[in-house]
Image 1 (spheres, one colour):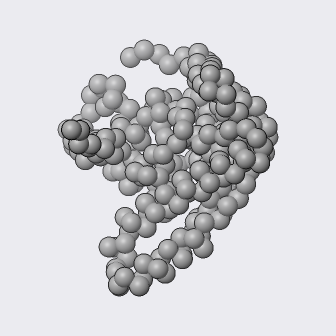
Image 2 (spheres, rainbow, N blue to C red; image 1 turned 30 degrees about the horizontal axis):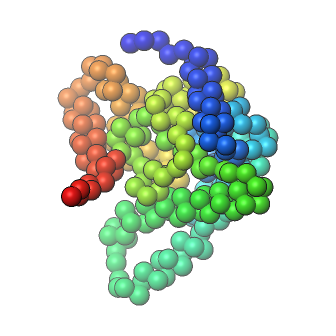
Length: 251
């Protein structure tokens, strides 16, 4: 397997962002800061590419852990970009109250719907703020995506939620490579090595997936894995392919 040149790849991504912004007469970036490594690395890349004055981070708590907001502030303080807190807990609760008019449902029946509603509300909020700050500052802000290659391969994202963004800086990097980029950009260790979780279900990503990100990366690189792990990854990939394509009838 070809060795990962972190300095070269980091500079390539920064140049990719700058070039896209220059070619399309864009200025700013807005992104959700979850307190995890992916959003921290994307924030660091956007600051390097655009300048801290052109980056706005948003914390979007929704029955969330206070630690996530604290870690998000750690990142914004370190890189010097503006951080907004936009609490969507009441919005989520109002939605649930309206839902109760349709009938009574068990927690198990609602579990998947509830988990996926949160990133969809977050996506709507980021796009609202993107349009607002574009108008206020007279420059166009894009919403930056924070999904990595391992998550994308197994479909670990919400359709119409964190899958929606305008630019995707780390989508071609595995979790291990994202960590290396984060180390190169001096992302604080507390965030960089934090166990990844969605902040929604009180489980780590790997608990939910049933496989490790390291194993997903090995599978994508054609490395040897035990049959059970291999089958789990293949099943996750196959079951989530629909998230990437919208079947469209053509006359």
